[in-house]
Image 1 (cartoon, rainbow, N blue to C red):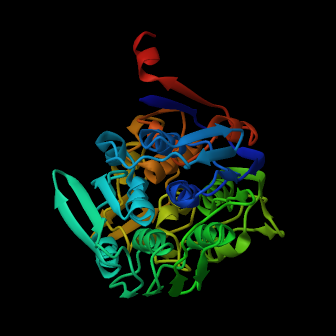
Image 2 (image 1 turned 180 degrees about the vertical axis):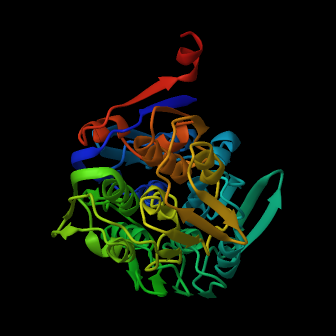
Length: 426
């Protein structure tokens, strides 16, 4: 595991360019195995999740090559194989291979998903969708066994009991080659789902309604790529840098973002009193504003993203008063709280409500990144603290934030990553 060394008292100044969306990329890579041709992506983030997914592809005899944001995948020699349990359990998004393998082979054996421990994230809606399409699903030996019936997958009407990004994507991947028409109601509306549908449609799929709560999929027999798919900018990475710029910046330009994807987040910053200069594909944050407390309540898109409730926390600690966060999606997403408390932050959680108060006396400590967003929120706080903060398990941050050293250097901030083995010998 890696450690991130953060010297406090550093203000952000300069510009940063946002990379491709992690939450798109981790669905697009499994989707690539549905193609009967080579697949090419650009604007691919250089994060650990991408490299872990490439290892899974390799286990199925699918070659891939990643270089400078460009990823080429060749699924033409793919072999049907159970997916490696260790890799699956370390990366929750690998469960998208359930839908992709079911769509490609009519069968999938996938280990139970892992990833960040942020509370229960059941896959019952995924299984409900697969069964509606004509698949039999069995859970045994710590894996999910899914197999289409003798006549293959067929279109169906599916109403999700709750809005689920994962289930919407997985059923979409399975349905795209199924016979007939599939209608998904109460579907998730996230921009990453639109990105996935755009990719599939450009290969010959017939998907309508992505971005609304009703998605219609007319199955096709084959998918072939004719042009490179450019992944949308990462709205969560953009929101993270905007939050840090507003909390601890003196002139920060955030480039390569789609402002519409950030509407609820931007609205909350304005409610706090943050000055924003919004351009077509960038936002400038002058910094130094007097801030008011707010209440943040997460919700499925187009609501306030759960992935941004932790990154906004350092900013809330600058406000004059007490703010509240209610995470309706993952109320157990609180791994950052004890670590921040050790640094002197005035933050607590009770009965599903996180309370964040002004915290002027922050001190650097040795803390732990329990998961991606918790880790990066601690990084933002460490920059506001006195002294040096050492963040253990920094690999969790690197799973979701690419080239973090270089990007912060462009913001006049010096960070250092060291391997735990190195630090033991010093």
